[in-house]
Amino acid sequence: MNKIKIGIIGYGAWVKDAYLPGLKRDGRAEIVAFSARSETTIRLIKQDFGNTVDVYKGYDDLLKSSEIEAVMIAVPDAVHSKAITAALNSGKHVFYEPPIAHTRELVPQIIKKLLDAKQITHADLELALVPAIVKASELIKEKSIGNIQIASIKLQSNWGPDPNQDINNIGRLSVWYTHVLNVLLDSSPKRVLIMDGYGTKGRRQSQSTGFYDYDGIWGELRVNIDSAEELTINIEVVGDDGNILIDVLTGELKLRTKSSKRWDINHLPAIQPYADWPGMHESITSYLNAIESGEPSFANATTVANLHLIGLASEESKDTGTWAKVKEINELY
Image 1 (spheres, rainbow, N blue to C red):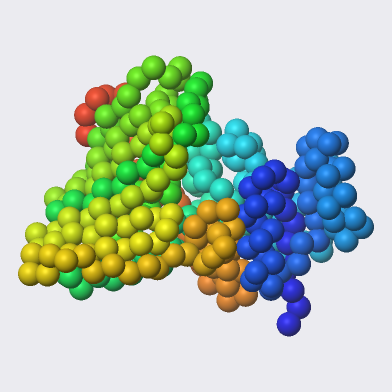
Image 2: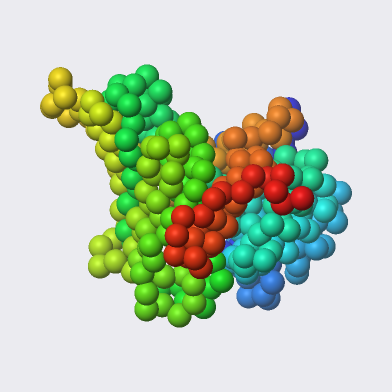
C-alpha cells in the first residue's frame, strides 16, 4: 500500500516531540515536505532531514504541491485561522490544533469554512482517546456509579500567564476539556457559566472556572495555568451510588460504590512512551484512519463547531456575568 504523503506546516517543539514520533510509530505516512517562516528553522529542517523532504518558506507554497495529500498544522494560535483556511482551500486533508482562531470575531467565520470543507478535517482532540477516559465513559453508560450528578476536571500547570488575549482561558481550553466532559456524559451542555479570576491583562485569566449545564447534570472545568504545582489533570465523576477518579497523565482509573467502598484501581494509559502528550499517538492514527477510509474522524468539523460554540457561550457569560445559552450551528447562518 502506498504511504500517505504528508506536508507539515511548522517545525517547533510540538512537531518534533508529538507529530514526528506519532507518524513514525503509525508507519502509514511519509513526510515529504515542511514549511517554516524563519531561515533559522529552515536550516534546522535541512539539517535534520537533508534532501529527503522539500522545504518551503511559507505554507502557501507547500499547499500548492501536487505530491502532498494531507497536511498537519502546528503554528502559534495567532496564525491558526489563516493557516487552517489556506489548508482547507487547498483541498488537502487537514490535521490541526485548536482553537481554530485567536479572536472571538474570527471563530464563527472559521467554523463555517470547516463545515463547508469536503476533505477530511481532524482537530487534535487527543485527550478523549486516553483509554482511561474511554473506559470511564463506558462505566458511566452502564450506570456503574448510578445516576451521574457532576463531572469535574481540574487542570493545574505552571505554564504561566498568557496576557493580552481576546479569548478567555475556559473558552480556549474548552475545545479539549469540554470535549472530554461531553464524551464522559455522552451529551453536550445547553448553557455555560464562567467565574473568572483577575490580575492578568486581557481576557485570559490564569485562574478560571467554567460550569456546564447538561440538562441537570453539572459539568465543571477548573483551570490554574499559573500554579506552584507542576502539571496535573484530574477528573472526578460523581454518581448517586459512587464515584470515578481519573489521573489523565498516568491513566489511573479508580472506581468505588456505596456497596464496595474499596477502590477498584485500573491503569489504562495512552500509548507509551507518549508523543509528548497522552493520546497523541491515538489522535494521529485516527487522522490517518479517516484518510484511508474516507469517513469523518471523531474530531470532525461538526464536533469542533459545537465545541467552539460552547467556547463562545463562555465568552458571553464572561461579559454578562450570568449563564449563557450555547447556540446551535444553524444559528450561525
